Image (cartoon, rainbow over all chains, first blue to last red; front, side, top):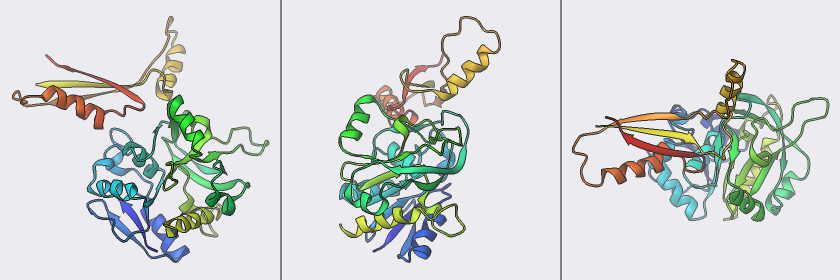
Length: 230
Length: 80
């Protein structure tokens, strides 16, 4: 098992992702600079969060043209496991590896907080480890408002591709659980095969005892399990 | 020559920036305001001899990079 974490100019969760896999979960992992042209030998590729290329033009728009993205498309096309987190999710959408797009949060604020997340997909690989309990996972983004047209949303639902939704908070807190106004409270999706995944919340920032929770661990462990089954 | 590309949010896509500006304008006593959309302008300066098919090339970069067709529309014009 070997994990690769892509690194673009402006990535800033690359080290967190590497730490979560290499140090916390003890899996061999390495950084992959965006100029690299091959992803051979990797079982899981993480596209980390950050502000690749300053998020100029649109989030993820410029990263999409990096040399490593050509390799990532081939890797994903061959059934390789890919996980895009936050800016990584935006990059995967811009690259056409996942449907839809992420726009400015409806509140116009950059939201940095811990949210409640529920598993929305009925996929067995995810149901067993995550179950019905909400997960507490941090978000930190200004543009996490997922958008897709009606036909696209229907397709996501029909194919069980909505992996995570923001869940309501306890009634004592008035604000709704969805931090960005995303369509249908979508926090994370996958392709039909379940091999390319994108999510706005940061599971890699919920793995240590000093983090707000360690609920990121079962998410990352499930990814490793899926990657190992290929 | 100079090409001016205008990128705007699609009409049926939520435009939080446009909505915020609209609220601000409404508080400025601006009667008759129906909607506000916030987009961006990108200026391209190109050799006069752009070569055959330059118009198609501009359309291609507008679709591939300068706009995201999922959420945005674009149009371009040659500046005088």
